[in-house]
Image (cartoon, rainbow, N blue to C red):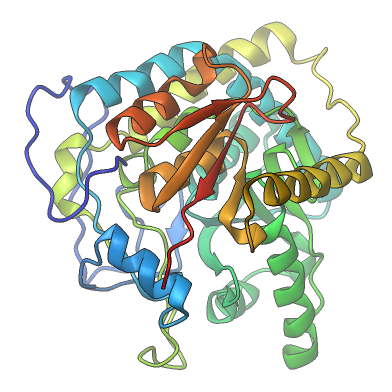
Length: 392
């Protein structure tokens, strides 16, 4: 959502929601859990929980001191002010056609690798809207039905194996398609591979460790529609573009062995929810793309090794340039930079072009939070962000 923390506040002046953008309340006793989506969109294999608000500066101190893992805490979200929300609509205007084209390409990529059936498994949270869209694109335009589940994966903690087991009770392992929005450094792709390797040993079931994304900056995705660092509009917002669901949380010390990973459900934001508006708006553009370009659209070849090398060299250069001790403090690409400025203590925003339309929202966030900006025209990505290393 935005850099505002603590309890939600009424900031006023927010643009009226487009037609169809209203959310709906959740009955916590009803199963399955779909957030503000419908059962025809997704099943979240998450456990709605209550969790105390941890302010950003305290969360950062606890993470960097090793006292808590990031997955054990949440800074509660609040609604964005009007001028920030306008940047989302601007991003939609500028990038919805590109996203629609990439959805078409990604759907074709999935069909080419899953001829015997498709089960979409999106990774909470950036992968969720993409998974919802893919489910509808596959059905509408390729006459292919696919169940869609959204499950948690956390750096270090790994994939939610209880959620995975639930899916495998209903679907063959070879049908699973793991979906995310993008890759930054490839951490989640490697975490997915490590989790599935451990699962094969513990449960005796082998699942292809393949990640499918809209854009693959680091070369770690198996299938991607692009490797361009462009602004995917959904990255600007958080819960109100993702079914009113928070990022996932997991505390091994308090969770039941049978539990799914947890989440907060922001039911109080239902009247400002843009999740379904986003799906409808992008699908309308897919209609146009499919009608005009369906026979000419092709996934361009990626040199994954070259992308991985570029990512590694960038991390080494930035670490040396700024004396950074851990690559975890460097976030590559627009999507990851946005997450830092929304949810973490940021030290610096790096931009390839100060005047780029693609990074307007990042400049807004940096100004709001008094984060310095440096411009490097030879940056391999349009943006990157550095997390502030605290003196503990």
